[in-house]
Image (cartoon, rainbow, N blue to C red; front, side, top):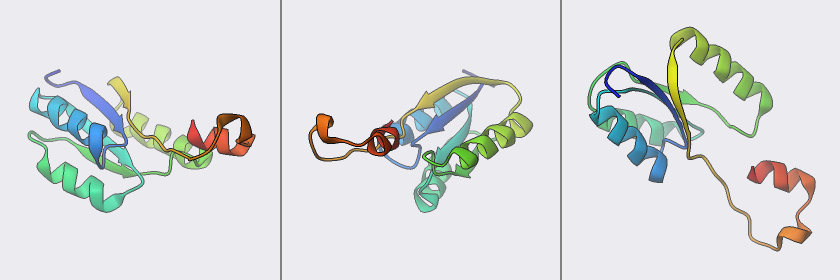
Length: 106
């Protein structure tokens, strides 16, 4: 992974944060993505190496995702991996969810 660029979504906590830490420890540059700015800052401060970036983005917002893609293309033109750890949950039966709720979960 040395010198590779990896984009990690859901990077402010949990699995995303741990994946980012492990990739950085192996020499990767990490583009950390999450909607939690404070969590992103804390994780970024814990990473070894350099060249990491943080991107506060709500991945349920199509326009924000499009802007993120453009920003990443400009700042990290050779992304080797995209690791998607962002996720949400909703209590209830799946057969009772609306399409809007299903899209939000995805």
